[in-house]
Image (cartoon, rainbow, N blue to C red; front, side):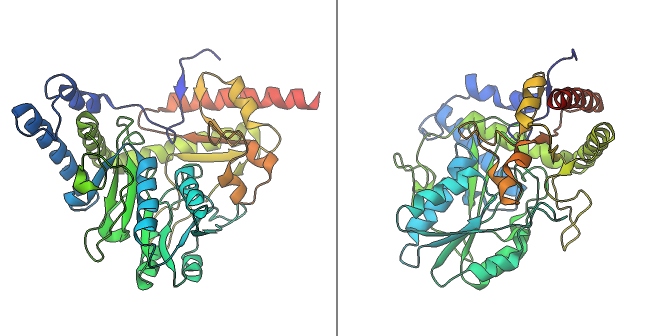
Amino acid sequence: MNHPPIYLDNHATTRVDPRVVDAMLPYFTDTFGNPGSTSHGYGEAAHDAVEQGRASIASAIRADPREIIFTSGATESNNLALRGVAQRRRRRGNHLISVETEHSSVLEPLKHLSQHDYEITLLQVEPFSSPHAGWLDPQKVDDAIRDDTVLVSVMLANNEIGVIQSLAEIASICHRHGVLLHCDAAQAIGKISVNIDQLQVDLLSFTAHKIYGPKGIGALYVRRRDPMVRLEPQILGGGQQHGLRSGTLNTPGIVGFAKALELCLTELPTEAQRQTALRSRLWNGLCDRLGKLQLCGPAFDEHDTLGQPLRLSGNLNFALGDVDGEAILLAIKNIAISSGATCASTDPGPSHVLLALGMTNDLARSSLRIGLGRFNTETEVDLAIEAITQSVENLRKMGSS
């Protein structure tokens, strides 16, 4: 099919909203000072912009501005949280708990810590045959906590199957045991309500480029009271941000981050509803054309104990079973989606998330992940249905010949 390229990989990254670009531009050319150089007007103006951005982002998640530490992105935030807590609380214990389906920016730091005499427990989630596939039963956290446990890390929304975890219930369990809770909220922020008062997490990682903001800027929420969380810094230098993360602050990025999050929260109710409708259109169209497909992750109509959806509105992940997902990607080069065979650019194997659900290697490799976003339209969805259908049908014919 001949049509302009269509981007349906919004879990990987998002297009920067033009309104965000407009907000950032003056801080590249006019207000370009170092926010740490407050002895002159250029630095003062940049400093003020940074602090306004910090206050705006803190307000969006109901945090104190002093609890927001800017980083280069969620990967750095996750590393600072996990390694920072583990190293600071070593005298209390050396046991950390997380989940098999976490992002590699959580699993890899944990693997690194395990090579330095820390003990790591990775919990299992509901299997792919369950309508709650990918969901973590909070009781498993309770059962896994030991006297020497110092931190639990559970992502709020999964980047591959869109499952949303019961963080408030998990937080209650952790705090009853005197254990800190970290949350990777990179996929959740701006897409669902993320309220620190409700979630009661102690550390929370998020980033701008998943919410139509710039790449290279993220943040870590660090609780300052009840309890006050202390971290061992991972980047040393100029002592910026209370010494927790040294380095010259990215003024344009912070301004863009704040604007992007503001726009997401303003548009969240209508956008979530719109994306849900687009996903239904896409899923129903593919099922009508291709027959029975295996949904990867929780069912669309499943809700948690509070009545909230169990899956992100823009997420669709499904397995065909008889066609390799990578082959489909090669056949539809003008549509950007992801395959279960390419969960990371450095790891060509099957998605560890899908394998953790109990899927076989072949079934995981036959999966496709589609991330719908702000700029996607019904026309694009219909074109995607047609392109995917044609590619699958052609590959099926080749396989049967």
